[in-house]
Length: 107
Length: 121
Image (cartoon, rainbow over all chains, first blue to last red; front, side):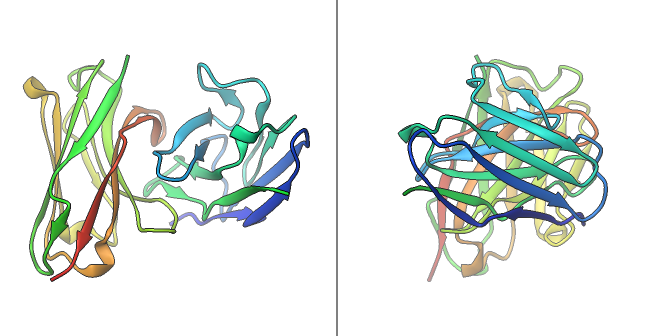
């Protein structure tokens, strides 16, 4: 199985900050990577697919980059509604695997 | 507009079989390139993929759970059913179904609200 490792596991930031979350795959996955946002008690919401493509309706403050084994999710100008847990997921090969999550908290 | 909703028991006993139904709208499972998958999340933990089914009835399972899982679809009812045998307390989790587009693997884009299943005697 391909292991997905996110860093950091948790992150404190202030409203208005720009933050970056990293996801590393244990082997190359081309650009078959997605990012999800999950708020407490809610289902994950797709933000980005194909490493850098924004899902319809997702604000442009979210951006993704990377290819191969190293990927990043950047969120600019943090707002209160952005504080959540973020997951990456590879879909290059079976089984599809998720990172352990990055919890973004208000400082 | 694509929507999915999970249904099934909220409480099962150890060793019992869990049956979950995903009822969806806004797409057809007879359309080439789409499918429905199941993902679970134990309380406070990360997401874990379980199984999925493609429009052409191709099925894939998590290797670690393959012996316990069965996924089927009823295209006429817009439903996908997941069964998991021999339930254990460690299977306590919120179970989600999700629509995906078939790329190399599943690109999950729309998710149901999830259903919490507790395994306890």
